[in-house]
Image (cartoon, rainbow, N blue to C red; front, side, top):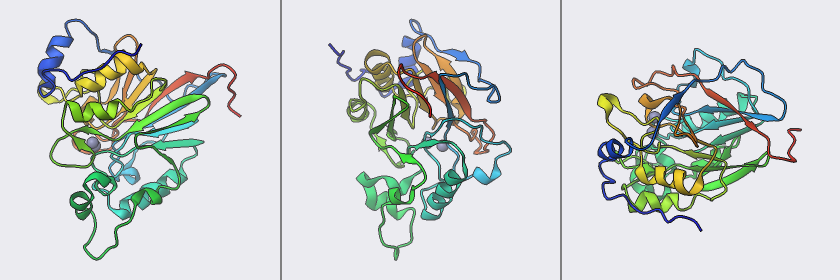
Length: 276
Ligand SMILES: [Zn+2]
Ligand SMILES: [Zn+2]
């Protein structure tokens, strides 16, 4: 039977919760794989990025090749149509066979739950309201939804604990947990915009920003192989709790400079799957 995940009594104090949890659980940093190492036969290469914030033309690096590219949100600065079009054109220019994209809190024009407020922030008054999702024609867009590629299930969700009234913001606790309840049990690679608590979520001055209910959902119920996210630019890197590998792929650093390299990992193809 599935464990029932409940709201942590200190959900609104993530730093205090992690102080408690870190007495019994680990967050071990992992080295970042050299992307020029060839992918072994029988494996799929996944390339992860996030938080590019409309700065793809400022990259001082090439995006490494892989079978699947994941972008974990914040591909724009504020979700303007011209930014979405530019991002979609950039996606087209990349050679990866599949490209998976989710939104982040900066994609203001995508948040249908608060469209009046957020949409107004990214368009002029005379423009008709459009669904920005229609502009993403060169990628697989996930929003509380899944796609199966090479026999591996990817699930994507843009929601994160609220901070300053941006897109896909929810209150910590029950509201966030209601979205994590939607993640299928058989997810192999989970993509969320924000991190779980304690794993690549450290802010300056040792404060923590991750969601404790997301951590509990990942560790106790879903148990994916990989959990890919961004949002907390300072948390860029890879780590593990001994079971799940966590990837904070934030390309921009804390000063919104796109300096962090894409993170690459290889996954064994499930039995009976071939790449061609
Ligand atoms: Zn960001
Ligand atoms: Zn963000």
